[in-house]
Length: 328
Image (cartoon, rainbow, N blue to C red):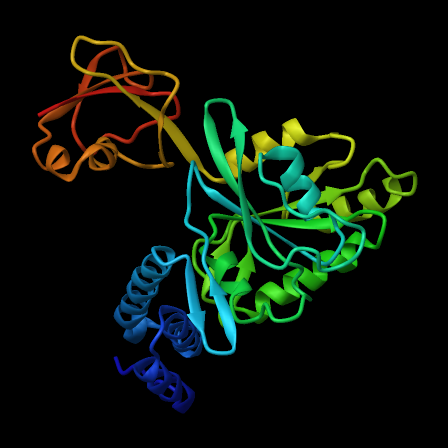
């Protein structure tokens, strides 16, 4: 079946071939992906573009600060169980949230656009760390060249709104900004809808719930998001809802904790391996060492098995809290 690609696709392809930086290449590839008709004739080409975008994103992540004439491009190297990017308008409290939940020290002030660069911090949840990234407001000057790509690369988007200032309108503005940059905020979709290149798992963070005029606006926001996006009500300044925030962010990352133990020894339950839900014994062995994974014969599992110490193959799907013993 012919691909029937539009002329704009080939223009974007020329820009891709002329691009020099990973960032420029990613932008061109994403435009090609968005312009490509979706049918059986383009399935293979769509898969190839996804692979190229993923490889270039990894390359960009290995180069956190990349200079470009006239501007600066930024990437934040992922750490911990996952990376959550805080997105919103000015003065909604993103920096105060990061300061309250991590050891990072972003600048906090009552005037707009105090955050000019991405500021990562590590948030503790039980025995794992989750990376929160404080970002400039989406309306801040001189961020359009790099801000969307940090959000695209994140594992989770936290849409922060101020419940005292029409949070529904703020949410709609952020969703429109995401759509403008070909991102759909959804915890249900597996494939990007037409015109989009990314589906981003997202939570809505309703901040400043300690203010007197917040309750009615919060109810309107909950109604707007019902069945679409989960809402977490917090007060970064007073500390309300922060424990629920930690838990829901971790769960939204859709990861599991797995513990390894040496044959005949005990598992270290303080430092789990964190992998995507649906990962197998072979996937965890890969995180230990590629040679280890290659020579893996079988594993024993404690937790989700039919009985403790059950022998399983490398394709066995692990559950949160499983303990495994790898045998080569």
